[in-house]
Image 1 (tube, rainbow, N blue to C red):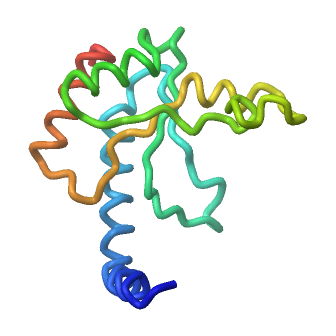
Image 2 (spheres, rainbow, N blue to C red; image 1 turned 135 degrees about the horizontal axis):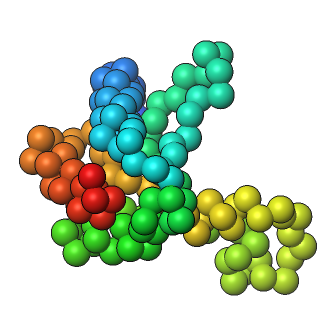
Image 3 (cartoon, one colour; image 1 turned 180 degrees about the vertical axis):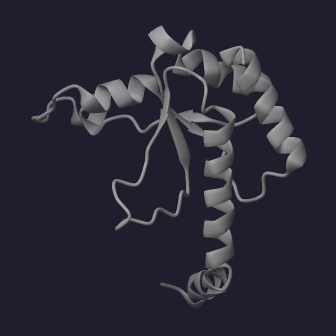
Length: 142
């Protein structure tokens, strides 16, 4: 690790608690905003023994219940110039690993097909939240 990278990392440690708090607040905001939308779920901490930094807030959409799907929502965000992205593509679906053995049960494919990483930056201000809210309310008809 270079001195510059070490310095940046050390500087980030000084604001780590603030960043975790900001990301946790964004996660709570999304959960509150979408709490009554059928077919929308978020990853939760499995027990009080866990403490997530909520660096990303990701949702899984059940298209049958929600009335929309991950790709329609992603494209609606894109049209509003708001970045979002599908959950990570499972390794066994990536071309470089196409010929490798995979031991799967459908979970990773289902998460990739229905999961979306929402805008989660610690710098999302009130204007940004309003823009995000507009897209979510329009797409989920809330």
